[in-house]
Length: 85
Image (cartoon, rainbow, N blue to C red; front, side, top):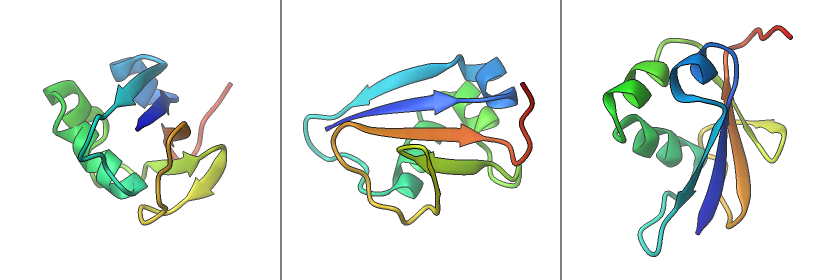
C-alpha cells in the first residue's frame, strides 16, 4: 500500500511539505494508525505530530477522524486548526 502524507503550517516547517509512505505488508489501516506510525518514525515526527496540539486530519481532501480507513493511493494531510496563506 502507498499513501502520500502532506503537511501544512507549523508541521510543514518541521517535516517538509510531503512524504510518500509505502508498505509491502502490515500497513496502517486507519488515519489514526498512520498518525501513530509516523510519530514513531523519528524524533522530529514525534514532536511535530504530538498529541495535544489540536492537529486536524484530512483524507483525500476531506476532514476526517482518526478511525477513517486508509486505502491504497490515499492522500492524508495534517494541519493545525487554523492555517494561513
